[in-house]
Length: 318
Image 1 (cartoon, rainbow, N blue to C red):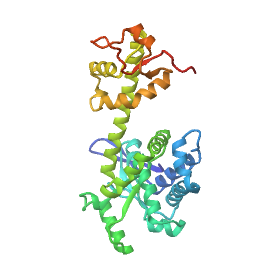
Image 2: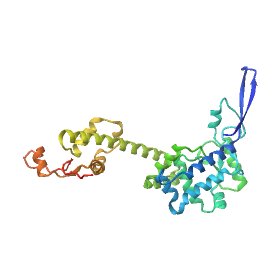
Image 3: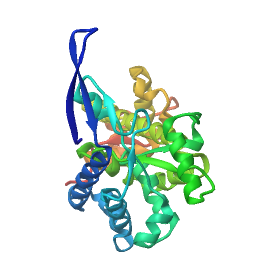
Image 4: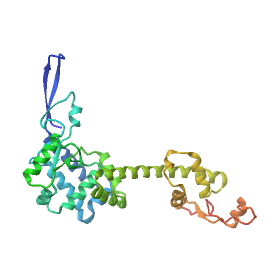
């Protein structure tokens, strides 16, 4: 972030304090420039889901995000810092100054006047950016900070422009590879994304973010549970020649892993068995007559047990 350092001598502490004169407009312009460059590098090879999201319907969303970044790069914009004087702030180090955020009002109506489209198209794109951490939102009407400096600016902006509600301010952070990875993850599940965007409109960003975080934890738990299933099934086949869904569930419960606590194990196994067998070229079916004899798969009354088993016998060959 652009800044100028000055040093002020403090007689009480016998040391110099650093006065950082921070240019928040320059912070906004620099961050928007970096983001615009990174956006040009998004393609189907490195970020397939995010690229598809951006470029569907004639590159509509890529165009909208570029226009938002173009709006933020303009020197005509005015960025504010909500917690300090907008220009002068005393900091002990550059890291503290860097953490201070420049907020900018981005009216949807102004975007449509400059670049076309509609309020709803820009709202949808910004909602995606909010969930992915590509932009941050400070909505005065949703927080109890009516006496804050930024709140005063928001109400002043409302009165000057004849709006019905206080202005909403946004902070554009510096994008990096983690930012793009978060966008890729969010775009990879279109059904979930649609649900989350609807939640934002109905219940607000905080509710959608909580739901998203819960979904991500659940997804991670499922991936970890599937890895455990792989090991259990492989060990059972190596030892006994075959295994069953019931035996896998029994072994899962005995592991007592944290990731399994909130999962429905029967449904997990039901959904994953076919995928598991395809992955390792195993067979999931009723046992053959040969398998019944080989492993003595019989009920207590001596009749053959025809319950489905997982085995490498008769498996597909890659």
